[in-house]
Image: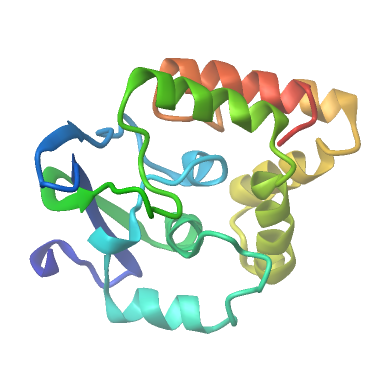
Length: 194
């Protein structure tokens, strides 16, 4: 992990081995096909229990207090560092992520659970993606590289503009890791539920 870190803000993270209460393997977490800011805007691939941050990343994240309206701190780290630094993803599952009845978020472990989560996004009252984008833009607007600023502004404007929703839904600049998730993302954008 440490050898892979650069002089830029860097976040290292890895896959998970998802296990049950008796530590029997259920699955492996997704191996991302493409990592970057456009993914970080709409999906988190950096699970907090696998993260290692270098000093520059910590300093960057500590420049602003974590807003109370940021619901998933590891996703926030992925978003900020993907914009201003480097994400290093290790495809090896280095920890066992135990699932049990008391998990607050956890991982869906079967097809039905995965499907239920995906469609719950369509009707979820928490619009985490757009709320997080608004906060991100407020805190970092003056420092954003032009392409990233344009993308975040498009996402924020999509909440009140049909034309921006269509542009965002058709854009390849935002993506999720799985094909079905990409389809649902575009649907959620068009339904103004992002």
